[in-house]
Image (cartoon, rainbow, N blue to C red; front, side, top):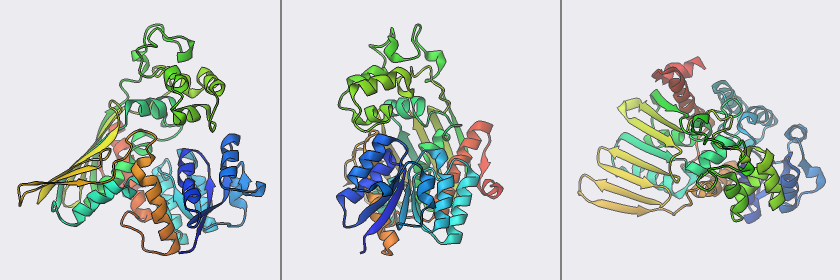
Length: 422
């Protein structure tokens, strides 16, 4: 297998996670250029990947205007910045690893899919759960017909209270107008997984949900706009920014994101939580995305699925599958899968790799798994069953868009008609 080369557009959490594969496996992947506007991240990436000054750019547009210089482009910028570079890279003939969501509107997602199909380029959208040992094990059990035909799915995403406060109350995904709705930004992972496991097309979608807790109505009396200004509830608040970002010296991920720097100093973190997004009272932010939501889905053949996402927990994903031959229950964080057989009336235990369930967990190994399959896919080798084409990714994104339409309008969305309307 020949070495695959890549450029990265952005070098934040997502691109750095994928590009790290080149450091750990230099015989398989090489980073040829990066574009990153934040100086500390740009310099860090330049040093890590041994890039010369002419391989480093502050603006993705400058990089994309250069002649094609690699096999793959990794796009990991903010949600609302995916569409324009994806279209430009398709025109250049790059294969693309595109961070989810593909784009922030159904029309843009469809245009990306159609352009890629027309140009003949390969796009893998980062549905990284597909590439974990846990979800592959669940899919293998289904494909071996151990539980028969799936009749119903009950899938739960526990976002985690701190992840919610960090990313969806204070952070970059807090406001649907600036990024995308919660069901898309966070849970297009899950609409994709549900469809992948059932293996049939969605027919109808219905959803309820709201922003209920992280609102001004729950702001403690006397609470300042910024936690560092001295809140009367500071000692008992789970979301005290001083405790989370400044006092906890071991949480390098939170500290780095808050300061928007690699390995920030205490002073840089302090400055960030004094004036920046991550220092604000969680009940005094401009967030509008939901903190809990349920989605009901019906698929071809009559299979049904219920998806529940909420913030009020420690984090992790759980799934229960009801089949014609048995029942499966799985917990992603422990890696444990329990299959009950109707034939034997016994439980069979499977143990996939245990994963970190919190915000820093690398998606349970999916960040590495997707890179392994990407390299095989681009090299012309047969990748694993986790790879899907861009059309499938688009349709599974569309389930999330349909759910949001249902939530906002109080309707049951006919998926086929919705797809035709895009």
